Length: 360
Image (cartoon, rainbow, N blue to C red; front, side, top):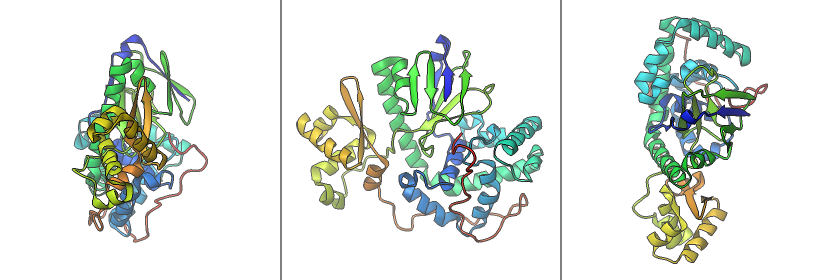
């Protein structure tokens, strides 16, 4: 259990990311490749990514460089998730390159102690090896994360809509109460289901909330409590841009009105809003949402006197089926740190660490 302790000043200094954090998304996308848990929610992305990485130099570099440094485990180095990445990928990379060697050595030592570090990791105290690491991170982001950036932005936009509703209806307490099923607000402490038992005292520094597209179920915070506090957590569900009209095949499967309801809920809507949009009675709208919810296509969440409906990943997948052959390829470049090469399939990239809980 992670207990985040707020002061009155901290409650006025809560901020929500207005764009996906590229380095956190790199980390969590790597975690999605290291386990089958939650794979159904990213099925199209997983197929595309496997096609991009399998047998390529980039795939080999990811397996040899990125997975050991960003394992799906209880710890990975904080310096690979710098706050500067909130301003963009290049700013984040610059922060990694500028990390003081003493801090790099300390965090690599923690990685070795808690999880196990590759034998080349201590050389990251030198700038040249960190430049090689950044080069692989950049290539991975370009090939695997960036092609899905529109979907990530839409997902975050939908999350901010939900959070705006929560804070308008219930104030800061409403915001903190509705963040995630893995969190419970008991003023002045936010209780977070976590892989270890610890306390985080904000002490007036505030808290940056980072909804993440690739984060699955378990929220994550930085390991070092002295750093600017951040809490990364999964978006409520996948939210994509609403199509102009449902595909004919979807209408044939669900019925025209129910298919239109599913499309309408791509950005979230209450029962009354859905009824107005469809031109039906609230009772009829309730019937349609019940059927869609029972089929696993939407999720419904009560907020005081209203019920807000949003898509589940399965519902989003029905609205947005993957396009055949729509994957980005990359030639990659050989790296001198560590050597890359080989053609072995890379997914799953590595077995998950079994002696520690599976997320930090």
